[in-house]
Length: 195
Image (cartoon, rainbow, N blue to C red; front, side, top):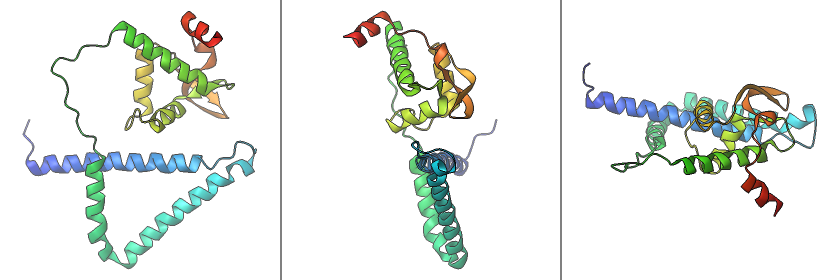
């Protein structure tokens, strides 16, 4: 296999950063549009906020396209800014300890219980929770940044949290955790809740 030149390595880094930046921007825009949904209304009235936000995003994209077509010299500023943002989107590699110990069974069990508790909270009185909803919640609280639903599904499977391929919540079917599949809370957790 041929070794990559410095220019090829930089190009790959920039491409990777652009993918991460696009994914992050898409996730934020999608979350912003979803936040426009009114849960106290039903039917078309409930999603009018989402429609309005999607129209605003489309108008902004059209305005940017029109401005670039009208004044192409603006690209001399926008392209370096985009490249700078793409490079900044790449997470800094944290220095790993020389000998990292594998997590103990107690740590894994505690992590599983915390995750199951969060899942129960997110399910509430619904039949289940989609993995995308769980991932959004984790990312809003500073965890799992830059990860995807497939990563979360693998993590849940490793922790022996049952995941179904088709969980129906609010009329939408996707990968998720169903209420019926959740194990009962541990006895210590049940006594803490009773107290």
